[in-house]
Length: 187
Image (cartoon, rainbow, N blue to C red; front, side, top):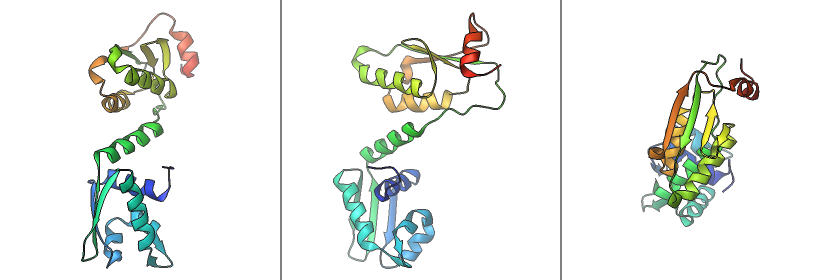
């Protein structure tokens, strides 16, 4: 699924909301008021493109990302599945970035983990994610950053189900920190 494609947007808006969406295809304007940014992608020349909308729903349903049902009265009930939520979490984790504050708080965050071998895929994925977020690797299972990252670490760890194996230490000074200050361009 390509980012910013219609099916992706559909799944994204479902994930942002409650996970259940009920739309009236007989009176689509009322649905548009409720989820305007979602529905507007399905309007063509001031007409709701029902065929395109249902086609996108069918594609997402084939992938088992949503379940939907069109009832006799023109109402469509859409529910995001567990697989759909996981897919959206994956997209959110792929887009994640660590915010760099204007002023450094002079605290280093040392992320240490001891993830068992039976969770090797999670361990490797976690390690790669830390690298992509520009954490500095001190050892294979020890990374450091000067930026607040607790929420991001919690989010990533919850996706991989490894939060119990991760420790975040706050360090104010350590030997050799000048090298890392240069690496992160902070002073």
